[in-house]
Image 1 (cartoon, rainbow, N blue to C red):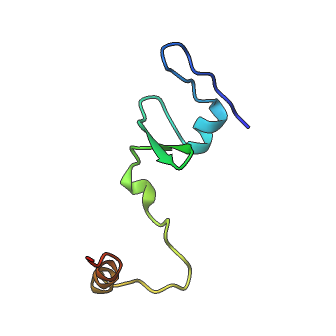
Image 2 (cartoon, rainbow, N blue to C red; image 1 turned 180 degrees about the vertical axis):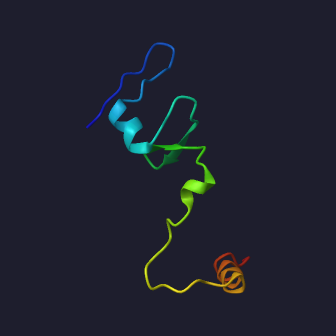
Length: 79
């Protein structure tokens, strides 16, 4: 498991294995997401083009915008 050390200035060098796994490059921004008793580090600036096809499942039919809107409405009903 990769580890890093916090400097006196509050800086951390992200290990190469982690940078490679996340596809991080110099200048990339990162988000720190607090979850219970841990912090999740994730890239903040993803190129939208890189998201193309991530939800593709062979054989699954496309969903219409109307059906998406209905699902969102059902999920986010006001109390």
